[in-house]
Image (tube, rainbow, N blue to C red; front, side, top):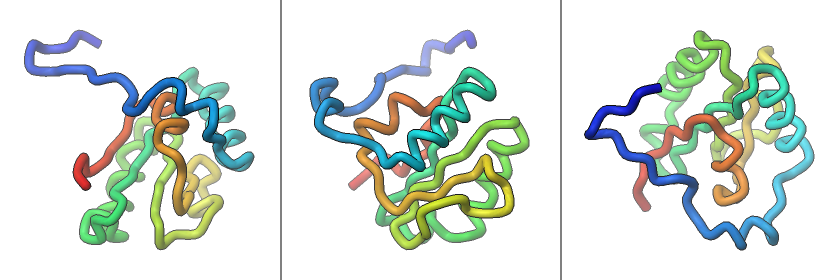
Length: 116
């Protein structure tokens, strides 16, 4: 895509050497591999951490529906969720917690609140 002057790219957050020590669970790695094999892109990651209002079922549902409408896989990080497939759609996965420095570089888009 063509970026406008007000767009900026920061790259993945964290140090590259930190990736050596962090591993994603097998069920997540398999999901990421499937997303990349399916469309050549990683999934959309929806992660709101401690923001319970943003993590509400209604907001998450809309975020998931928007990504799925585009044919993208979705990985939801929800500390109150259950690890595994989140619905009857095998292209939507939930994980309670994952190391962002290992995950974000494999995602095509990250939807995150951006604060602490």
